[in-house]
Length: 317
Image (cartoon, rainbow, N blue to C red; front, side, top):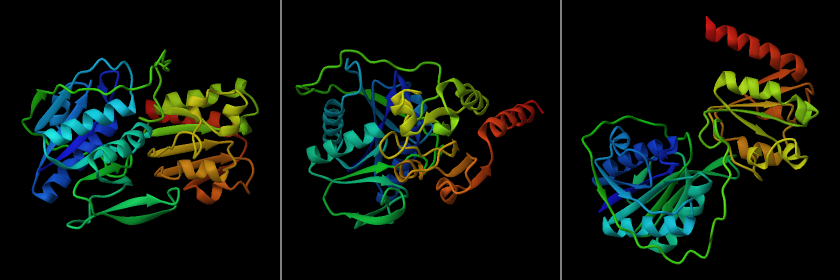
């Protein structure tokens, strides 16, 4: 029996979450006295995974063109069965949350998403998970013979454990997908929300799209991704791909800066997993202040330029 880890990638490069789930899978395998197998689908250089304990990497090369949950789930299932995997580990990104349940159905396995720690027990198999829109936790027991675990971003961390690994190819058969991608438009030259350790987000407090320059400048200084609240994307000030929150993209960054965002329940639920939250708002009664680690009561048009200036001076020191 083994632990199979799916190392996700984009445009031929492994995502940061791939290294986190490999780090996690290695420890689970050690807990179970088993070995870890890492699956790469159209991924990067397998040697990158050896750094995090991947002694065996299974590489699947398919001309899928883009991510398709049904196809990826079929490949993961086939590799899991070929390697006698008892536990399958994926991430809990949007793609991971699409693939995980499909893999579980295919393997007749139990599925626990948003795991934030290693199993407290492997017999029975119990994992701690986020619950109630990240407001609490629960301990979930997976009682099926096979298990699928989705690891929450930035919950376990990336841990180097260099080994001498080896890669092998695998020929997977794909089912009829029933879905065809006509075209995909990607933002280039920017840090994506999914991969960002720092996210700078803004809301209607910026008064209009013409004022977004300072948000982008702050993001550039911090090497951060830019994001926005739902009303901003609904108004067309920013693309919907930047909408974060419970009804948009979830955020689990190390630092989340909210500028001119009052803090609706749906927004807070979607960004609550971020480790440090900083709020800049001229309304001291804004709900976001109750959820923030740090808050600045002030006019964003005065505070943000000063913050940019101080950060630039700090980086040059």
